[in-house]
Image (tube, rainbow, N blue to C red; front, side, top):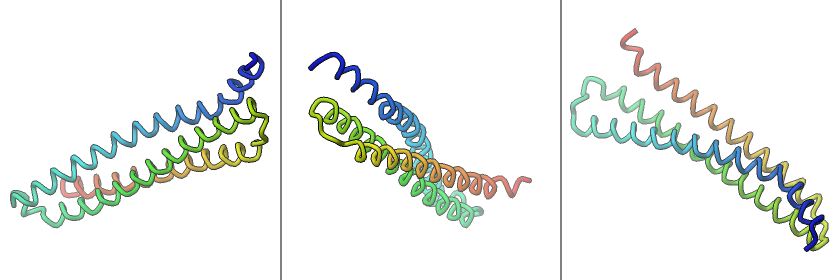
Length: 146
């Protein structure tokens, strides 16, 4: 292994590593949101089971439906982010094979890059849908007080 090949590998690996870092930060944020959705769902289910919130039973059921939708959006966002990280890792493997073994993976690496960026965009779209659904639940909750 010569130093020039190693320097070339590092140079070509910067973009996939940046994608992995960005996707990982988004993944951390989304899993935190997912935990909050689960906690809120469990609290609403406990209220419904204890019959303490009978005056707001239908409202709680609507909120649970919204929370279920939000959890699906977050799950899809997580799926796309994990796909992006996986594709970025494949890019690094392709670049490594290209630099050290001389195999031609330029088109493959470009396809992996495109799919990785697309996956991040799709995850952001699902995150936007989840935030919109969260606002819908908030409106439902505060509507009776305004």
